[in-house]
Image 1: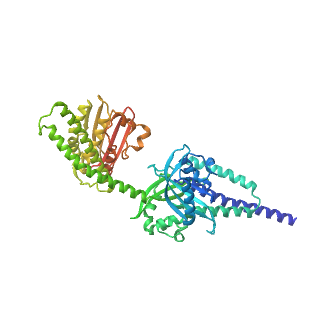
Image 2: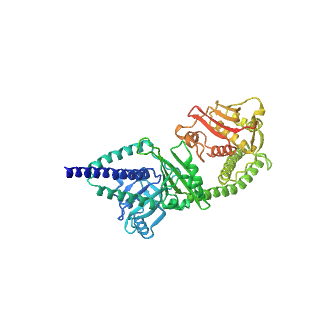
Image 3: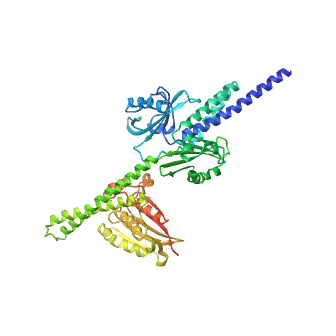
Length: 530
C-alpha cells in the first residue's frame, strides 16, 4: 500500500510540475506574441536558405498577403531585385547587420512599392551557429505611420492561447520535455530582443522594468544590469530617460506615440502600448518601442531649408514682375487697348497668387525651423478684426455673399496679449477660406465674444463643408479636401496649418465643426487680459 501511495504522490507531483512549467511557457508565449503583434514595423523571420519562416501582422497588412500565403516562400520572390536579395543575405552573414537598403517590394496586387530594408543575422544561444535572419521593411512612399491593432484582436489572441494551453496540458507527458520547450521559447525570445533593430522595453503593471534589449540600452545610454527589475523611479537619474518617463506616466490613452530628441545626433520616436494581462482582473503591462527617426528628421529639415531658399529666390523676381505689371496697367508706359489691359490684369492676378503661395511657403518654413518670431503686445481684438475684415468685404461682395459680423458689446473684454500681424494673418486665412468655399448667395458669419477667461473667435459659412473621412487631415500641410479642389482651384493647403501654429503659439486652441454640403464653422480661443 505504501508503494502504491508513493507512486500516486509522485505522479501528482509530476503533474503539478508540468502545470507549473506550462504556465511559464504560456507567459513567455504571451509576451512574445504580444510583442510581435504590436510592432509597428513589418518584419519577417528568414531561414539561412532565404525562406520566410514567420511574419508579423504589420508585414501582412503592408504586403497584402496572408501569413499562410507568405510562409514558405523565398524572400527574393517578393522583390523586384531578386539577385540583390541574395547579395544582401550574403553581406549580412558576413557583417552581422545591414541597414536601409533601397529596393522595390512586390505586393499581393503586383504593385511596386519603394522600400528601405534592414537585415540582421540570428544566431543560436551560444552565438556561434547561424540559424536565420531578421528582415524589417519601411515603406518610404508613405508619410503616415502604421496604426496599432485593436483591443479586440488582443482578446481573440488571448482566447487562442488559452485553448492552446488546454491542448498542451492534454498531450504533455513528462516534466523534462516541457522544461526543454520552455528553454527553447525563452532563448527564442531573447534572440529576438537582442537582435531587433528597434529599442524594446517591457514594464509590468507595477512599472517595474522586466525586459530591455541592447538597442534600447544604447539609445538611453543605460546598462541592463543597473536597471533591470527596478522601478521607473530609478530611471530619473539618467538624462536621456526624462522625456520617456513623462510619456509613460500619461494616462487616458491606450497607445501613445511621441518624438524624443535624445541628443544633437539622435532623435527617437517612442511608442508606448498598454498590453492587457492574460489574467482576468490584473492591470496592464506596458510595451515601449524606440524607433530611430534621425534620418527622417534630417531629410525633413533639409526639405524645409530647400523650400525656404527657393521661396526667397522666387520672391524677388515676382515682386519685380508685380511692379512692372502695375506700371503697364496704370498706363505709365503708354496707353493700352482694352484687350491688352485685360490680359495684363489676369497676369497680375496670377502673379499675386504666386506671391501669396511664396509667402505661405516661407511662413511654413519659418514655423518648422522655429524662426516664426512673435512680438506680443496688448491688442484690442475688436479693432484688429475690423481692420482685417474691411478689405475682405470686397471679396464677399464680388461673390455675392452676405458677410455678417457679430461682436459682443464691451470692447474691454476683448483685450488680449498677442502678435498683431500673426493674428491678422490667422483671421484673414479663415475668412478667405469661408468666402472661397461658399457658393454665390450664401452667407459667412463672423463672431467675437468673451467666454470665461477666453476671447473666442469663429467663422461660420454655408459652404461646401468637409467630407467626414477627411476631417482628421484638415490642419495638415498641403491638404485640400476633394470637394475643395473641385470647387476652388487656387488654394495652397497651407492656410489652416499656419493658423493652427499661430493660435497654439499664443497658448490658444483651434477647432472646427463641419458637415458636407451644409457648411463649416472654424473657431479659436485665446487667453484674455482681465
